[in-house]
Length: 310
Image (cartoon, rainbow, N blue to C red):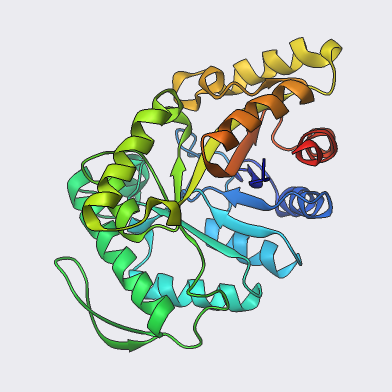
């Protein structure tokens, strides 16, 4: 089986910049392909807990690394005007020499919008705004110029120069499984479709729906990389497995994290076997929460005993 991209998801809540830089450089040194941040104004449900701004942090990390790809799982479309976002993305792709991944979604936490005085709206309205942003990004990346007239945004002959290093642009990752709004946007605009943790129990059905939508609009579904986001509780040996499992249950035991649906609790051979199953299902990108928020030990075991065996 061919090896997919293996990345780690490391929400920056509670970490200093030095903490984040250390973990990012360890990932790079160990051959882990990508690192993903979250995009919230504060940790969801924890407004008094420290949390650095997502785009500034990604810029700093990309400027201090050489090979690893960095992105967000996912950017909130509500936070940045799409023209500003396009300019930010092309600039950061230049700074990083083509290592930016652009994950984006319609927004998921209403409380931070209300506190900041940002427009929220219904899921249908947020999805419509996201669709317009995706069209604007496609124009910016492919032609270095934007002309767009929509319900939410109007852009007239706006140059975006320099364009991105990557061709046609940073890979656009759209996460979510909603069949009415999200999957049609994935089919039309995404380079990568990410299945979030809360949907791991229904993967097969959602893949079938996406393929059907692609066929309806004339897009080859094979041109979309399937991505999965999952919690991994990786124990270096059998003796440490109970402690690892206990910590994973404490941190990620609620239903939305899909800890048990992911099937990634175990020692390296068990995790390798389960990743093999996901690869056989067609997943070309696997983004992992780790049970201990990317300790040196877990990153080293992931690299030497899991990724190396794939």
